[in-house]
Image (spheres, rainbow, N blue to C red):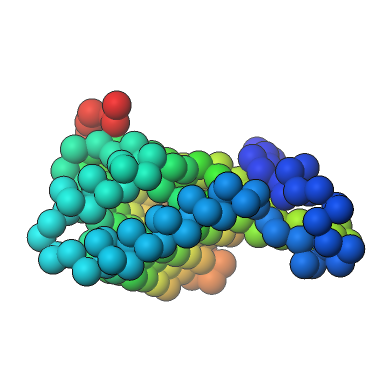
Amino acid sequence: MQKQVHYNAADHISADTAADPYLRPAFSFRDRLRRLNWNLCWALLYRTSPRPLHSWRSFLLRLFGAKMGPNCHFYPRSKVWAPWNLVCADQVTAGDGTEIYNPAPVTLGSHAILSQDAYVCAATHDYDDPAFPLIAYAMNIGAYAWVCARASVAPGVNVGEGAVLGLGSVATRSLDAWTVYAGVPAVKVKERRRFDAGGPRPD
């Protein structure tokens, strides 16, 4: 299935903002101001919070528009670029050093896990366009999926329910459900035993 662009800066930012397209902002002033406020909140209240205070960090994410199911465990050094583009079901975990770069919506299913230093990247640039605009894709990490430590998920790649992306691996294509992947780029290693992947969804 071909990737569908969710956001293209060329469609939102006027060419009049700068003669050199490389100097044009990728997002509106309002969006940049909102991210500034979130970054201040992250630095002062989120990053400094004690490790056990998962509910507090979920509250802060919700305050900035995230949809968070119950019992989510986002650790203090995890980073979410745009909380308003984050949708989490119940019991989602984001370990220390995890980064979710989400100029477009990123959805994580029930019991999905992003281990330490995992990187979910939802945006890139259109290198075939002389203006080099930022483009972003909506992405989905399925229920019970596990993105292992230091693994990366490339823009527009979806991780199927129960899929595993091994340590330090890079997913450049969508991962099938209940399958283990490893390597750079990641390839199928074996099937994973299936189990019930039900669970409540966020409000």
